[in-house]
Image (cartoon, rainbow, N blue to C red; front, side, top):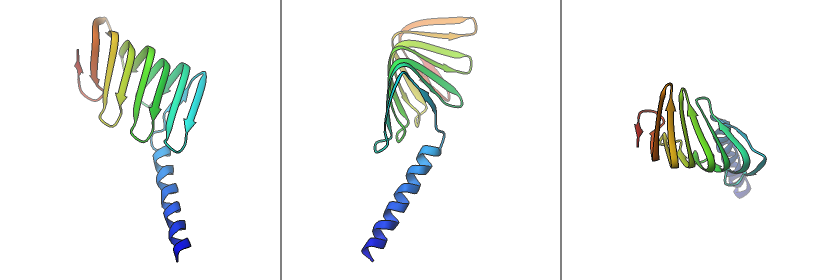
Length: 130
C-alpha cells in the first residue's frame, strides 16, 4: 500500500507542476539562460527579453520565478505594455499582484507624454504612481 501512496503523491505533484508551467508561459530569451526546474526559477544574463501576452520586459540581467510570477531585473530595463513604456535601472514585478516598481532615473513614455522621476510604481491593471 505504501508504494501506491508514493506513486499517487508523485503523480499529483507532476500534474500540478505541469499545470503551473503550461499556464501563461512567457517567451523568455537571453544570451545566457539558466533554469532550475525544482524552484521554477530563471537566471538570465545579456539581452534579456521576457514577453507575455500583454507586456515585454527587457534588461541586461534578470531573475524570475514561475511559482510566484515575480521578476527582478537590472541594467537598462524597459517595461512595455500597450502604448506605455517605462525605462529605468532596476525593476521588480509581482505578476500575481499586477504591480511593477521601477527605480533609477525612471522615464514614463506614452504617445506625446514624457515624465521623468526617481522611481515609479505601475499597477499593471489600473494606475500609475510616481
